Image (tube, rainbow, N blue to C red):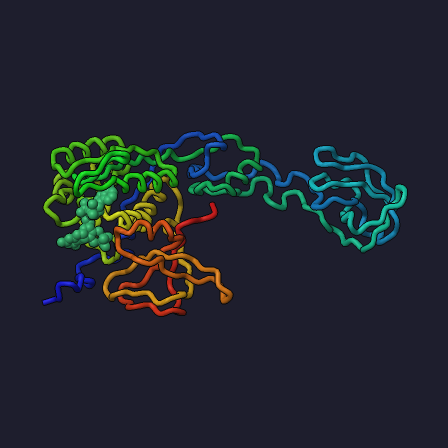
Length: 412
Ligand SMILES: Nc1nc2c(c(=O)[nH]1)N[C@H]1C(S)=C(S)[C@@H](COP(=O)(O)OP(=O)(O)OC[C@H]3O[C@@H](n4cnc5c(N)ncnc54)[C@H](O)[C@@H]3O)O[C@H]1N2
Ligand code: MOO
């Protein structure tokens, strides 16, 4: 018999994170609906068509520096300034032997010139320029089509638009883009103990924090959010809410009530209403997880413990949303390998997603835990910038050993 406090860390029936994610992604079918979206509102949308460059980018060969456009083959001989080429105001003549054109960054390279002498490397007397160095052909010139050739594939269908991609589309002069429609996600939290923020708490009651965390995670993914509020641990109300959620959304997410307690009704209900798998996951936090289909909607029943809600969202729901939004792979966050700055405790059995923070040390980037790791400690998660992933079979991890790390924040 196992000791009462052993926490049953190893369960041969439990599903691994990789197995569950594979099954979830296989069942996550991309939406087909599409719409035209003004580029200014396109952040976070997914391109529904390939985008080709309508013209060379840059359209003209232009100067990378402020200086003098000249013929490189004339060496370091003095040049006479015959005109000016400013961004938006090209010089219309031709640069000949012994001549140059005053030029600014971004201005068109005049005919005849094949190099730009940077002004810091020139001495000017009267209208003569005396090069202090020899320019090679092509020096400080950005050639037409160097970024993208006319007709070249700029961005592929399935690209998730972040600021850099928006910038590329803007540089092509495209005011509206073809995008897949946004994913409609309905969610609600379950539990008799949950109270709205701002209300007084009675004995045993807590604030419904998961719904706010979920809302924020969905907002970041650009979903159309349908917040259905709090639902008590009442099978009739739960059934009604699940029905209406499935009728209005592409995906339905609940938190709480997926475990084995007497008030955990999600399992039994969904077994009747849809095609649902209840998985005991081989991970910590996030042991119970429900996944399946409810009418046409993908369903996720996330565990109620607040940290478990976040960790399971990032490991399973986010990849499913990204794929259903039409984004091409990858759908999972990449893992870095970083040295641990301190020992971390772990029992063998479940894959551990410990909350961590990155440390800049003289020896380079390292990672440390954020302290207490239980699945109700949201303050720890709020101080974390990454998850430290310790393999199921691993025991305590030693300072200095390399561990997998998933960043919680990205630049874009
Ligand atoms: N006998 C067993 N008990 C439990 C097991 C188990 O395997 N056998 N698993 C434990 C693990 S691990 C987790 S995780 C939880 C998951 O349970 P539920 O999904 O049924 O969640 P609840 O029981 O409803 O709530 C758990 C915990 O989280 C709080 N909670 C719930 N909703 C919210 C919310 N919207 N905002 C903030 N906090 C919330 C709730 O009050 C509970 O404290 O089951 C364990 N038990
Ligand atoms: O698996 Mo639970 O999420 O540890 O608290």
